[in-house]
Image (cartoon, rainbow, N blue to C red):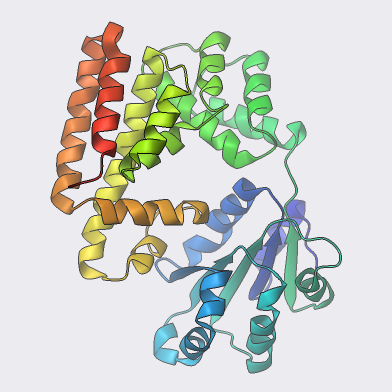
Length: 330
C-alpha cells in the first residue's frame, strides 16, 4: 500500500506494523519517525543496519521469537535496506509477529526493486516515498521557525537559507540551528551574517567539525579547519555545538555504565540519534571516559569566555583547543 508523504496523517490512524521509507530526503524521514512513532515507544527502540541483521540473521530471528525480548511492544528501525531483506519481511508476515513495529529505511528505489514492489502491492504493508523537498515545502518550515523564535527575518534571508539546504529539511534544520545560536548573541541578523554562516557549510558542516574533534580524528579536524574561512562569530557557534555534543557524550557515558552494550546505549538515547551519526557517536563513546567528558565540558565553558574576551584572537584560541582535544589519548 502506498501512502504519499503529504498523506502521513493516515499513519496515525492505521494498524499497519511494517513500513518502507525510501528516497533521499533523510531529514523528512527523521521528522516523521520522531513525531509519529518515537513518542509511542519511549525507550523500546532498536536500531540496526541491514548488514548487521543479515550477518547475524539466526540470532535476530531468535530474538524476534523470544517473548521476553518483547515484553513491551518495540519499534525496530533498519537502515540502508535493499532487496536482500525481503526474506525477513516474508518471515514476519508468515509468523504474524504483531508485537513489533518495523521501519525499513532505504535510499531511492526504482520500479524494478523487489522490496518496493512487495510493499506497494500488499495492503498490510505501507510504502512511503520521500522525495526531495522544494521551495514550496521548505519555505513554510523556515518562516515558522523564525516566527516561533521571534527572530526578525527578510524574504532574502529565507531564500538564501532555502538555497543552501539543497532540497533536504535536515540541511535546513542545521542552518536554522546555527541561526538560533547566533541570535542568542544579537538582536538582529543581517543577510551578510546569514551568508557567512551558510558559507561555512559549503565544504563541511559545523557538526562535522565538532564530531571529528570528539572522535579524536586529528587528521580530519585539521583538514576541516584549514579548508574553511572562519569568522569570530563562527567560533561562538562552533564552541556551543561542541558543548552540546559534549553534554550528550557525558549522558551516553553515564548510560553505558548500566548498559554494557554500546549499540543499546545509542539506540535508547533521547532525543534519538540520527542513524547516519551512529558510528561516529560510537567512536566518541569509546574515546572518552566519564571523568574526561566532565572535564571537557568545564574546559569548553572556559574557552568560550576566552573567545569573548579576546575576539581578535578567537580563531587561534579555538583552533588550538580543537586540535588539542582531537589528539588521540596516549
